[in-house]
Amino acid sequence: MAARDASAWETPPPIPPEGLVSGTVYTDPAIFADEMERIFTPGWRLACHESELPEPYDYRTFDHAGQPLFCIRDGDGQIRTFINACSHRGARLLSDPAGNARRITCFYHHWSYDAKGSCIAVPRAEGYAASGLDRSTLGLREIRTEIRLGLVFITMDSTAEALDKSLAGALAPFEPIMGGGSLEAIHFSRSLLNCNWKAWQETNLDLYHENMHVVLRKTQRDAMPMADRHIRIYGNGHAGSGKMVAAYGGYQGFAGRGSDVPPLPGTDAADFRFSVLFPSSAILSRGTVMRIDTVIPVSPSQTILEMRGLGLKGDTDADRRVRYRHFNQYWGPMGRNVPEDMFAAEACEASFRHQAARYQIIARDEGLTGQDDAPLRSFYAEWARLMHRDAHAPHPVPA
Ligand code: FES
Image 1: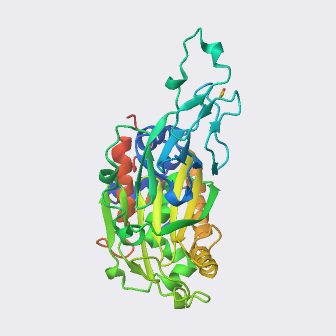
Image 2: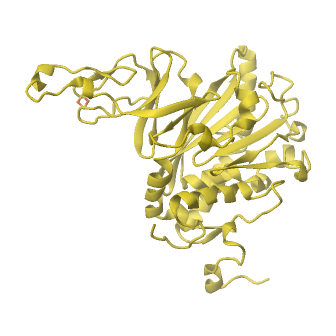
């Protein structure tokens, strides 16, 4: 085989187009703007875990599709979501990542809101008498919010399809683990990645890259026959795995993992499974701990990764310390795997940004077993459906 000249390098490999992704989908600002409008604004997004808001008036702030939002538990216990912008002149209301606010008072002119989004106070309201301004019409913009298995989902689109239809069964592997409400958040971190949001999701969809992680080579890749792994394609771009197993004894320091702390409900210490929710989240369970990723696109080449860890409520202090160790062994964000995934996503991005590479190849077909690329193809098929363009098209195509 020979190296390729410039012309051959420009030519897509002769394989079915669904096995290719053009580099332009990671770098083109027009495509990025389209993604915000066509994918992120109308779709459902995982916002947080309900245990992050344990008390009345607890809140969390975050951005979605360019909009500042916050989730808050009201006095009746319901979790609601609002655009984090004052009705007066639009100032951001809540700036801390998390907190507790029975009364939300804007720093600028001190208009105030309650946890149901009502505007409850306007200083010196008599100044608006001539204009007829009525604060009962000036509540916050509420965002549709629903909870499944303790996971809080939101959508900016009040006409979006029902959440369960959108999820298409992709949470089913986690119902035995999360369905009893016995998990709580034990970790939260945010990282700024120098890559497109899809490049991070690819690391969660791509089983073939087990070869990169020394810890997966030693504990997972060869722990069960490839043919016995079952990959699940749910529809709507969601994909994941059935039960896989880990053999912790293969890695120094991991032996005994799981015999030192109770496993999560409905699972065992060696159990590994994952679901990637299109477009922006991934749920991974590893016996004694869970990890939930959510990507927040910032620009074509920058992405915020929010990473949550879940453990068992009611842990003793000693058990919780063990669970932290289990979370950090694989994940982190300074565990064995996550920094390596960040390195890989940014390495691909660096090539596409300067067109040093033109295509990704996602053509592995192992009949929905082993290290099949079907989850990646499913993700890009949904991307193409919503974007009205093929992911393999080398140049931007008008909608
Ligand atoms: Fe919020 Fe004026 S902008 S009170």
